[in-house]
Image (cartoon, rainbow, N blue to C red; front, side):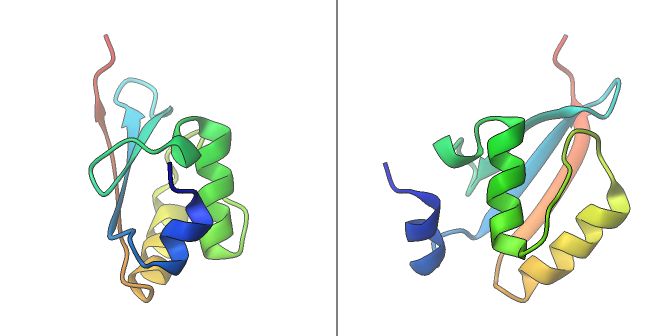
Length: 91
């Protein structure tokens, strides 16, 4: 598998979709270009990977629209579209 640094240097990340549970707005999963990726497959890895891309620490345990909006604006400058939603029903 390709690691995060390879993906970033090759400009292969086009979209990051972060899903939160609808009932409690807790982190559920991340899709990179519509697929799961090993560098993003847990809360900690997703926070570390996103933080590495942004250059600042992120907290994804709960959905924080303000911080996610800030991250989306920064990533847009890198050609990456960040979206998030709390419509993931895990029941």
